[in-house]
Each structure stands twice: as C-alpha cells, then as structure tokens.
Amino acid sequence: MMRLRTSPQATGSGRGAAAIALGAAAVLALLAVPVSAQIVNEATAVGTHAGGPVTSNTSSVSVPVAPPRQVLTVSVAETRFDPGATGGPDLDAGDTLTVVVSVRNEGNVTLDDVVAEPRSIDFNGRPHDAARLRLEAGAPVRLAPGAEQSFTFVYELADDDIHAAAGINNGVATSWGARASGRVPEIAVTAGSASATIAAVPRLTIAKSFAITTDAGLIGSADAGDIITYTYVVTNSGNVALSGVHIVDAHEGDEDHGTLLDSGTYAGPLGNGPGQWNLSETTPATFGANADADTSDAVFDTLGVGGVVTFTYTHQVTQAEFDAQ
Ligand SMILES: [Ca+2]
Ligand SMILES: [Ca+2]
Ligand SMILES: [Ca+2]
Image 1 (cartoon, helix red, strand yellow):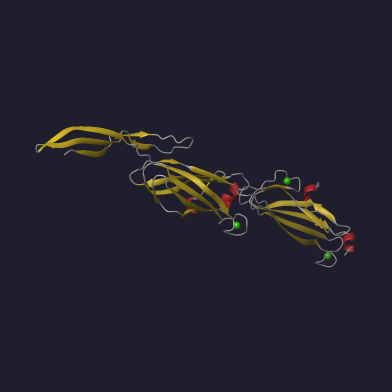
Image 2 (tube, protein in one colour):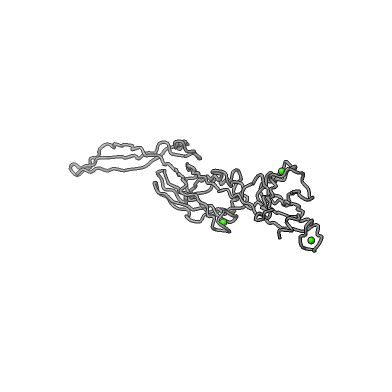
C-alpha cells in the first residue's frame, strides 16, 4: 500500500515595514508586513514490502503567501445642513451639519472595531468644537475584506461657525479618517473629504420712531415750525457683513408735498439741526466689526453681523405739511 502524506505548514520569517502606494490618495500610516510568509508542504510516499515499510524521501514545496494588508479607505457619502432644527428657515446656532462617512476594508485581513473619525471640520479657517460633534449612527464594527460600513456624524452649529463661513463657496471643509483595534495597530488609511457652502443671508432690520423735539402750539402734536426728530435703528440681522448702509424714507410719499429722504445722497454736514442727517454706531458687531471710515457722509460703511447703527433725521414741519392735513 502506498499513501501520500501532505503536511501544510504556514511559516513566516522576519517582519519589515513598507509603504503602500494608493494612487494619489494620502497614505497616513506605514504598514508592517511579514516579508517572506509562505506555506510549506512536505510530501512523503509510504508503502510496504513483505510486511515492512518503505518510505520515500521527503519532497517539499513552498507556496508564497500574500502579505497581510491592513487598508481602510474613507469616502464621504453625504454632506447636508438641516436649517430647520432650530429657529427659522435659515441656518441658526443649534441647527446641524450632517456628514455620512463610509469606511471600506480594502485590505486582505479582517479588521475589528472599525470606526470613522473626524480629522477636521473647518469653517473658513475656524476649527470646529469637538464637543458639538457626535456619532449618531454606526458603531465600531468588524469588517471583512471588501466590506463597508457607514457612519453618520452630526455637528451642532454655533453662531460663529455660521458667520465665519457664510456666503463663502465651499467655506466648510471636512476631512475624515478611520481606525481599528486589535493586533494591527498600523493601518493605512486613505482619508475622505468634502466641503459645503453656508448660504449668505444678507438682512437688515429697521425700527423707526419719532420725537417732537421742539414743540410749540399744541404740545405733543406737530404744528408748523415744530421740529420732529426721526430715529431709525438699523440692525444687521443676517449672517454676513453689509456695506453702504443708509436710510431711504418715503416721507409722506403719498402726499403732493411728499419727499424722499435718502441719507445716501445727503451732501450736507451731519448734525441735529433741521434738514440734517446724523448717525452713530450703537451696538458693536457680534461677528466681524463695524467700520465707518468716511465719517463725513450719512452712509455707514460696514455693518458687521449683529451690529446696530442709529440714524436720525431732523425735520422742521412746514406750513404746507400742516395745511395738507
Ligand atoms: Ca434654523
Ligand atoms: Ca406742537
Ligand atoms: Ca460713512
């Protein structure tokens, strides 16, 4: 009788470090691999003759084994804002940025506790607050070669995040990596990235009031010759700085004697006398800065987010206005 015995035996000798090239993608870690892993087969032919064993020589072959490759690739499947989470339809503090990140095992060994992780979330240069970021969906997972898992991160926006990037095309830049645990601490990770734009919301709010500052005749009512001071409180209630802020007031616009009071075209000196405009900053900007370099006109040059500037126009009631009532 003759039989063939084969004894597979995997061996590896030595370890070395080698970088893995992944095209244009960034390789963020070195990968440790055995340099000469192989499966050794030893075969022996055995027979009998006259009750005694006959054994051949041993013939062995070594089958090379692909070295283990621990490779994760990260891609961003979705980036979206949810402006409806808080307040009105625009993005406000408390609204969210959601990023869905997909991690794929591109190597040839199973990896444990694989999870995506943020590298950076940047609002036009302003780094995100890690305390505002949470992993909403997807837990650390065991990934076989070729398997993929999605992770959903939700970031709660702060006012300054929004203001820093509002109106800047792709002003929000994000970068994502991944990690795994276990016996393979060195994993090549190809990071994924994505960007998004926070829409500019240019918005001004005005509140107009008046006071009769010179009050003859009937006290508390306008008489010809009385002086009325109109006050216009203008707030930048949007998310971007505004320039050239001024007042256009259709003053009794539906009357024959109506006139358009436009501080933007006012050429006289600023002041509080009849027919004069005046203006002053009353609240600093909450983001950015207010600035009025040219203080000779009735235009406020730059009103930062949250900034308030107050205009006044001083009007002396004319006999025509009084007659027209
Ligand atoms: Ca909102
Ligand atoms: Ca009066
Ligand atoms: Ca000015």
